[in-house]
Figure 1 (cartoon, each protein chain N blue to C red):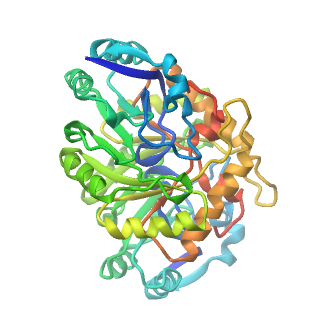
Figure 2 (cartoon, rainbow over the protein chains, first blue to last red):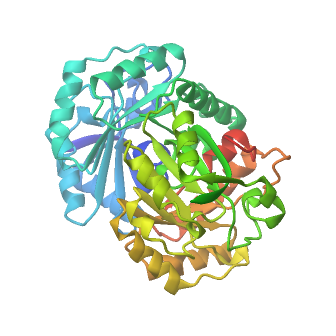
Length: 235
Length: 235
């Protein structure tokens, strides 16, 4: 089968979410059913970049991951775009046979049977600032599909107070899901440097906001890759 | 019983290690059997600050944690100094009875039966740059004592190439322990601001070093509290 792949890169560290700091190779799928206003990966989303997405067989994707990791098993991160609009079951099967682990981040708008084969499923429903609307029935389908995964968590990006209140509602819908909050990054131009101080300030703002509320459920984490490399691609 | 307590503060987020980003109240014990050259908590270590350590009963410590957290269970982080030179079993028992969870960070130089009552035991053996020497037999005793804990991990601070090679040896001694590497912070003066860019640079250096080695065992994490607040105390 043929997959549309925007980029495969690494090894580097996972910069965010429950596997923050973990060595990984990223497989970034091309194509997305969402158009988040603040998307930081438009090169994997917008049709105008479609000509840059390589059509690759499952085996070709897997060969590239193996080459980059020197054949040493690590966690492979499926991202995008929305990786769930394609079928990654064959790639996961190839990798698991060699002892690799798989994580996937998706907004939870498309459920896939292969969610059950993941080690980590990160469902990241998009808050109001994205301009998108979450279909919570499909989100619940994604949870059901992911029942076999080792861990399933919810991650929400927070740009403002409206997003923050929305995150509290989202958590109330699924209180059993470990929750990760991440301050939004408004500086998504790959050609402009990111100011580490403003990233630190946004993390401080979100931390203060959550603590002032006495809300101890979420973990609050930044994007380490943005801290280290800004919006540079391929790291 | 009376404990020597340098400070109790929070709620804030745990800035480092396996619980990075998790809301917590810190109980910082006064006193330490080590004198690391780059210690960032000398106010809880050096005898000259001893007069600032409050003698508190177990119940008084617990009352303060409960007050700060508004009686809502969260993770309590026992730090120091070296918390293992004192007996925290009664405080842990008081907290667990109310649904609180406990984490402890210690260098692994003193083993305590109450390690088994922890949710998270972070053993942080000190690398050569510290000027201290690890007694690996005692470290193994700490591991044995912590067998009942929900998770036990090793965390190592890395200042330079010598520390890095030492960390590889330490991991080889205990390959079953999840490993966390953290770039060292040379800017420990509480009155001087920390440059977020230099923190980002150190994280980038360590990440590049580990990836260039094709070493995928450790997770690599910064100190978020230093990023947000510099070396300010009580946050």
